Image (cartoon, rainbow over all chains, first blue to last red; front, side, top):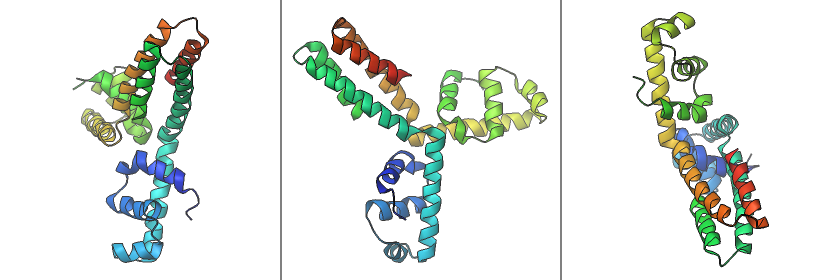
Length: 110
Length: 110
């Protein structure tokens, strides 16, 4: 089930606020804290099947948000282009312009 | 009612896909095509009050999405910092590095 954990946690970073509290909690325990379905069931006081269903719905919701809004894809592309800008600015190191550019790139990445 | 049209159309650009078809249509007719509530009511075959309620719900939904996800605020900040990068790169015009930087900025803005 946990076949694309990195992508899922990225999606959670972007769209987590749009999930229900219960979905968010299950998702965090499963993907970030690496608890098993059984452990989450015990912690949340629901059945193992209930945890499984909650996680499935949350995953589908996150994938739908990304399909509709595309924030993660846009962010990945942005990071690549910022990398291009940083590399070019570093070749101009020592100029005040390069410093301003690298400073702006840092602020964008924050 | 149409007190912050520019902000609303920006929100629609980002989060429109999360609205219902009916909300999206009313919103577009009102904010982008500048039809009156009465004209939209006639076009959609619903009451003027129905259009008003649909628009209010859509506006609230868009504001909620922005409060939770902050895409528009992040985009505004990104545009400012890209402006800083462009200005600095233009001072270095003629160097191949500046060309690479300006090209990357153009691609980000697309």
